[in-house]
Amino acid sequence: MSVISDNIRYLMLGLFPDGPIGGLVLTVYLSVLIGAASFVVGVVLASIAFVPSAPVRFASRMLIHGVRGVPSLAFLFWVYFLIPRLVKIDISPLMSATIALGIYHGAYIAEDLRGGIQSIGAGQWQAGRALGLRTTQLLHRVILPQSIRAVTPTLISRFVNLFMYTSIVSTLGILDFARAAILVNNRELVYPMQVFGFVGLTYLAIGYGITRAGKRLEQRWNWAPKIGTRTNAI
Amino acid sequence: MSFDWQFFLNASVYDALFAGLRTTIEISLYAAIGSTAVGVVVGLAQTSGWRWAARTAEGYVAFFRNIPLLVQLFFWYFGLPAALPPAQFPFLYEGRFEVSVAVLTLSLAWGAFVGEIVRAGVESVSIGQADAALSAGLTKVQAFRYVIIPQTWPVILPGLTSEMMNVVKSTSLVMTIGVSELTWQAQQIESETFRGFEAMTLITVTYLALSLLIVGLGHIAERLTRRP
Image 1 (spheres, each protein chain N blue to C red):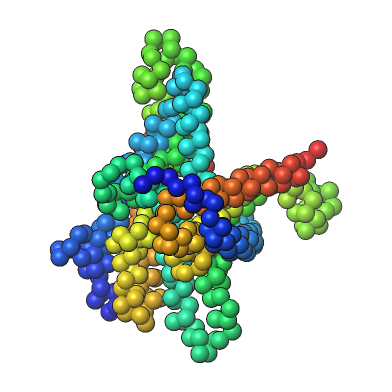
Image 2: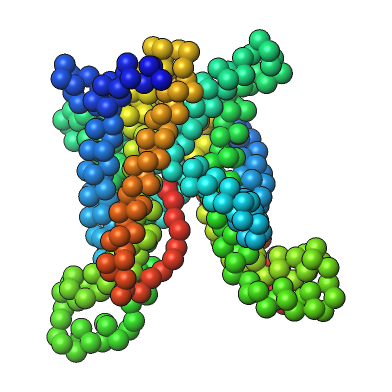
């Protein structure tokens, strides 16, 4: 196990303090960033279903279906090459990875939320309308809070997935936890089982931790209706 | 840089594309068969009623679902030659080793997901159905064959369809261990022509077409297994 303890600093922090931070810390940071971005994208895309304009609704449905039919890796590269065309400034791989994965997982979250919105009874809509709420108010105050609670289990497994699949940013040369493992393995050469075993188990432990924390959250909200769907995104 | 339409008239681009597509389809097919086989075993073990088998299968699912596929790929790709040295096990490394690793990893990882779907399918059939079949004089195997399995299809097939889409999509990750599949070829095209956006657009459309094909096959399967 000395191969792990010799390289633990590199695996956890990357080149920090001599260079940009990397390793597990970067993976966690990216997950939080992408998690927040994808949640916002998901809520927006799910809400667009209630926009009166049909072309806008259609465009949003197409985006959701299109994104879900494409590998996250292909989508990541696609956005990576697209952004320099749209804006004339240089954008870091980290930034474009955050944007790409934010949209990618956002499309999945939008679809999860759609299921949650459908599970809300018509009575809630009617009651809101009777109170004179506008559609945006109704969504914001009544429908979305209930839908999000209804699909909490799905959202949690989505976030675990999102955390795991931040590892694909290593293909853009970003020094995250997975890439740190690859580089350590290339340097040490004879301990691949130990290096990738350690990294795999660390991912497993954190993913399991998120699941447990999510279960606690669910229990606190357990008055809400539940939709037991199991999900995953690649 | 404007969008280069000439790019799509270039024959050598399509040569690379089809070479990659063939590998992607090949790996997808083997991994689909492999993960279904693993999934059926894992799913039935979880619903078998044997406690040790159910526990083992649960552990398997938790393990393979919570480790990134990329890390699993690297683990087998670098770990297998370290654990079973090529000098002693030459037959393991004949042919395209990276393709075998890709199929193995995808089968093991997606088998965990398929297992959950099979479990959900079997659990959706009420126990009364099994009791009724057995008391009608069917053997256990017959009860499974003629009563339980036909009723699991409506639950299993939609989930299986989306899982097979995930299998195809995840084949893009195996480029990281050097398999020359679709995404790898797109990277090659990019490095030769500097037309990354066009190359990625091309393979993105190809993946979409593959996904649609699987959705279509899923619908056909659902229609075929619909009970009168």
